[in-house]
Image 1 (tube, rainbow, N blue to C red):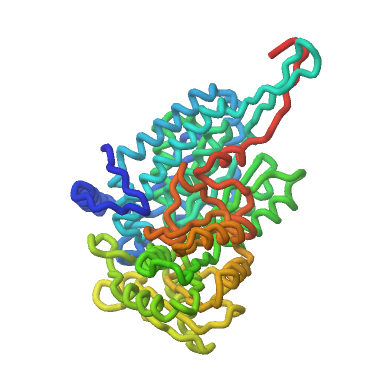
Image 2: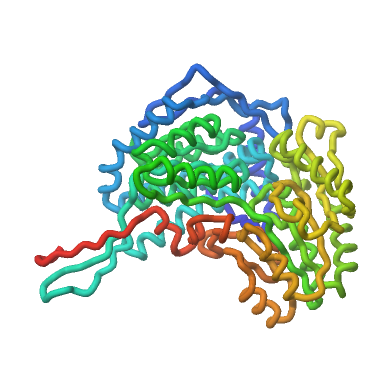
Length: 524
């Protein structure tokens, strides 16, 4: 089914979209709860260990039963991918591009069923879920177009002697372990695994244990698209045995990871220590994203952009706004408007059309929220809006909380420094744009930063001074959220990322390739 594009910024009102989504949701809900195997070398495997996944929307709903892969299964997947690498890496690049484009088409054809699945597995509203599927489709297609335009990254070089032929060729590394997160279970897996496969690598994909079925559906789309047996493999289960295997196995040539800073840093250090030589890790590790509101800002635009970015998907985005620095002259009015806007946000079952914010992903996330609110009050902060867990009626079967705005915390406070992944927004008044930029940069992270300022000189000063990989100005649809392939490359600086090249941007594919100089005295 051809979809009308719904991006994270547009979130268009489309009656056809709503009808199609609701029909797909009804169909999906009748087919949840099945058992799902591992996929290694094109074959299905089961283990003696299973785990059930319950929907964050309603804990009484089991989305499925999945295999708990251990060391043996992880090693088998790596070794199958190693054996499949020579043939896949030598496949004509045009055939690999065709397979990836067919994968994108397979995903697009199931857009509403995949969106319904993302709602039930991850708790996303329909608009965010449909947009995620659209982003995955566009991500794969953008990377294919880029790879074709770059002619596979083969670049002629100057001859050293008459008649010689020299060229730079970018070659795949080999086997990549791709570890994807719960919050964007389709697009972030598609971005990393798709890029690795497109450039001639083979893949072992391990989706997050909260959202494994989305990963399985992506694997099936790769197979339907024409990726051969063994070139892509999928294992489910806890992260610990998988991480232990892929950091130590000599056949693993690279790791692509999206998740917490702690796990990402462990993977990088452990992989470097256990391998015989350095190998790449493409890691995206979250952030503590700031937004600046200056005295020249359009406050209605600023409030809407901050509210969408802070509370969309319950703040469970590495791009979510979690700190706002507001110049004194507009701080009181901005706070008043933001409090009112937070109170207008509809929280509830994300299957319902009018809901803007669904559940948190787990009981642990809800506990993180409760602890943050309690810590804020304990340490002299003020809860300006929200702060409560919602447990009435059907909401008691999920993990629902209010969008929360706080103020009065010192800049050094842990709640101002640590990523929480819940809808908890800290507001801080500042004297000047320079102070706001300095405080924004005073963090170990550097993924996204935003500004609202109607003075072009202030915007230029912000872009010059901010130390983040993605920077937005006056973006009402999301102060720090809503990147799209081919529009905003998405990647972080400092502890937010290791590659220095944003997914969905012109350089990302190079993260999965290494350069080889080829020189011949007799031509090539």
